[in-house]
Length: 140
Image (tube, rainbow, N blue to C red; front, top):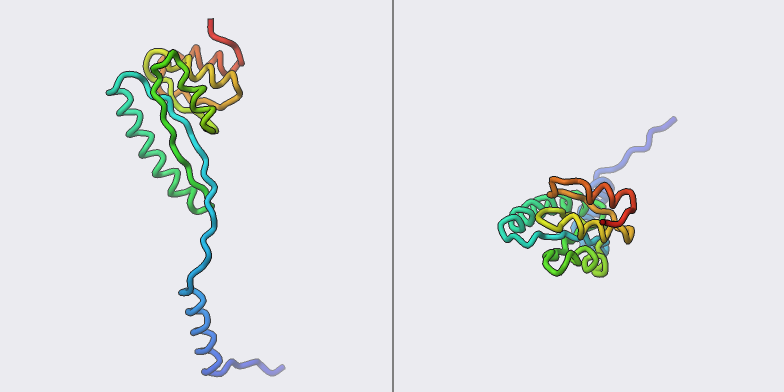
């Protein structure tokens, strides 16, 4: 069996071609963007804390998601108008809701959960609303 030897010119030519291909512009692939809704409490101090934490988490999540051609977007809504923030975020296209801080925050999550949207209670010390949402019950 005779081994197949690659000549110096062929080797350098293929190396130059590989370098050229890696340096040429490639077409960008479109990213899939997913919206996560965040219900902010009416209290400005708590809303700021929640927003800062969400921004840090969003940066970390997007660092990983971009490897797969995905991106997360955060949509916020203040919970002032009679606990309707959850429904407003659901209508805006949010795939999931985060919230629960402040008075009435759990009620807003409960209303969104009743419509079939996953909710994450990150701030309410009382999980009664989140438990009822998981069971599909209405608030009393």
